[in-house]
Image 1: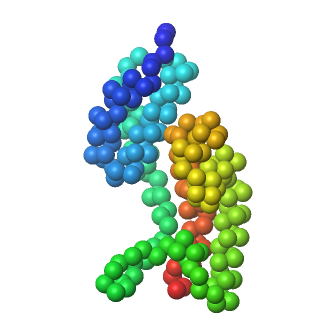
Image 2 (image 1 turned 30 degrees about the horizontal axis):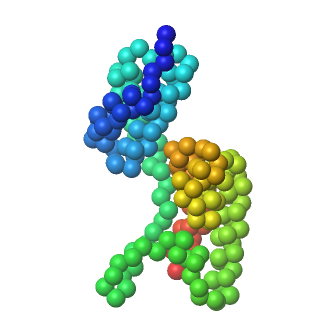
Image 3 (image 1 turned 90 degrees about the vertical axis):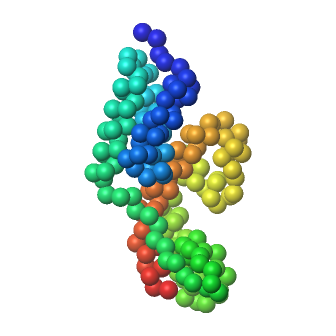
Length: 182
């Protein structure tokens, strides 16, 4: 049996499937689930061609929505909102790391954060670590990185997504101690 043209399937069902998922989840979660569904479709279709594509896609999306609902919500990087001269801004750990204040305490805390980040990065699979380092630490765009590595942009985005999820979870305690101490 012949395998499906993934680009055609994606084009045909993407909007309808996204609406279905979005109605039941948040927009960010819907994007992630949509990517997962199509990734699973590609994998499954390569093993054994799928006969009823529409039914398969929507059932897989339903299952993924249910699975996500069962899991604890993804750990978000803690943030605090601060009022300053009428402007509201979000202070995150990244702000802390680039803060130029030179007190011994701040310098020590920055070194601890960098040390923990480095440890966490080396716990990642090499491909995920590389994408994260190149886009976040070296400032490359996904397009630049794609051209350098000869890897599709979507693959790089997926790798970074998994790296960020792991790093958030792994560094959650240090983020919280820094933010709530200040």
